[in-house]
Image 1 (cartoon, helix red, strand yellow):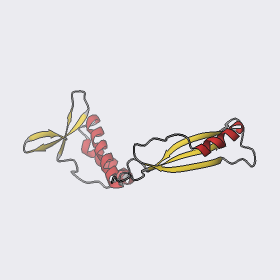
Image 2: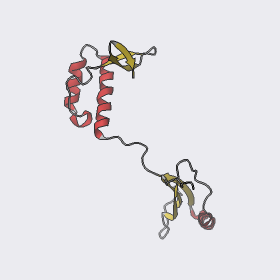
Image 3: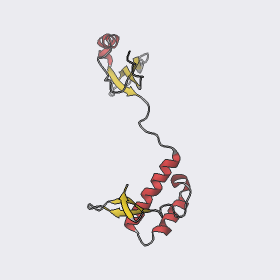
Image 4: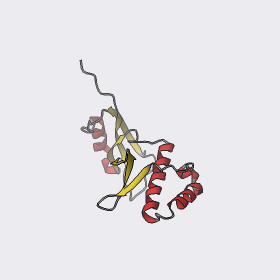
Length: 152
């Protein structure tokens, strides 16, 4: 017996007002009909439901159209601490490429100026991380382990 895949998102079909050149008359609904069905990952929208097709054939002359969209969870939501760590790392790389002599001072002043965006200042946060330039000039993180540099 095979397990059916759990629904990941909703396939939503709507019959909605779409005439942008004239306002919707009184009594006309913005969304005339809505059909939502759960779908599994990788499954397509499929054909328009029959009752949606029949309703559209009756009222499409008035300015309604059929709309399909996928209503699902966001692809990736990071915790605030992770976002702040990424922002601090990117700031470090940006300052290292532009102002290598004043890196620590500029880094500290920027972090202290925007604690809500970057998080708390941690002295020596990137002391164990070395950055090296690739052949195209982009900064790449290199961690030193046992005297050898290994790219991350």
